[in-house]
Length: 467
Image (tube, rainbow, N blue to C red; front, side, top):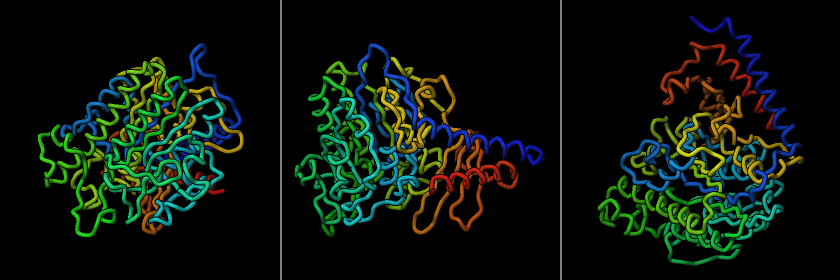
C-alpha cells in the first residue's frame, strides 16, 4: 500500500511549513529576543569545535576504544545532542556558516578554500557579520584560538572581523608541531607570523586558558576551533618524512603505547585523547575561577570524519551513520555535540531533535539579550527551548547543497525523512532516519508523496536562498 492518497495534504503541509520557516526568519530578523535572565550578568561563552571528529569517535556517543573522559563529563553536566547537524560537510564552509548563522548559499561561500592563494585570500566576503561583531557592543572580550580557514587577506583576518585576539593557523590543515602548510609557516598571532614549538592542540587550549584568566571579570566570548583530529598531510612535511598522527608522548602513555607506535588507528586514538585532555584543562580553569555557573559551553565537530583511504577510513568512525566528510550522507553532516549551561539547560539529558550549527548565533543572541539583526536574514533559529527539552526542533525542514569534485549534492530533512541525491543528474533517494539512521533502504519508490513533497520544498528553498 502506498501513501498516494495523502500526497496532496502532505505536500500542502510541507509547503506551509516552508513558508512559515521563511517568514519566521524574516520576522525574527527584525525582532528583539527576550533579555538575559533578570538579575544575572550576561553569560560568558566558550565555543569549541573539533576538526573532522566522527560521531562514533567519542565515548558518550558510543565509542569504547577512544578515551574522551572530559567530553563525556561535559555531556553528563549538559545536553548531549544526537541529531545535531553541521550546515556543511567541509571545514571552510562549516566554520563560515557557524560564525554567520547563515546558509552557504546566502554567504556565497560553499567550497573549501584551496591552497595558499585560497586560504590567504578574501574567503568569506567582508559584508558578512560574525559572532564577535554582534557581541562586542555588549561589552564582550572576544578571542579566537585555533583553525581559521575562512580567508586571511587584509580585512578578512580575525582581528579585523570582531575578535580582539587571535592565535591560530590560517589554513585548513597544518603539521601539528611545525605549523607548516604546503611549505609555508602558517601560525599567526594577530596578523603577524608567530613561532613556537608547542603542540598545536596544547597551544590553542593554553591560549584560551590565558584569555579566560585575563577576562575572568567577563563577559567574554572564547572561540576555540581545534585543528585536531584532522588527518596529517604529506604536503605539510619535508619530502620523505613519514605521514603519521602526531601527539606528545604523555598521551601515548594513556594507552600504554610507545610514541613510535606504527598502527595509525592507535595513533588516531591518541590524537583525539590529546584534544579531549586539552579541553579538560580549559573546563577546569572555568571551575578554578568560579565561572562554571555563568558560562555557556558548546562543543561539536565541524563536520564528520573523512572516509577517504589514508585520510580516516581506517581509523575514524561516524558510526552508526553512512559515509563521512564532504558528503551529505549522515556521516558527513551529523556530528557529536554537547551544550552546557548550568541553571538554563538540564544536566545529563539527551536532545534527539534536529538542530543545526546555524542555530548557534541566534542562541547566543538570545542568551545575551541582544537583538537579532534587522539588516540580514539568519537561517538559524534559537534552539534554547529545544535543548531544554521543552519544545520540538525549531525547524520543520533542514537543507543542504554542496559541490565537491564538480558534483553538486543536495539534501533536505524533515522530522522523520531525508531526501538526498549525489548529483543533479541523479534521482533523489529517500530515507527514514528514525527507523533507518544508517540510510540503507531507499524508500523513494515506496513513498512517492513524501519524495515529491520534499523535492518541491528543496526547489523552493534553493530558489529563495540564491536570490
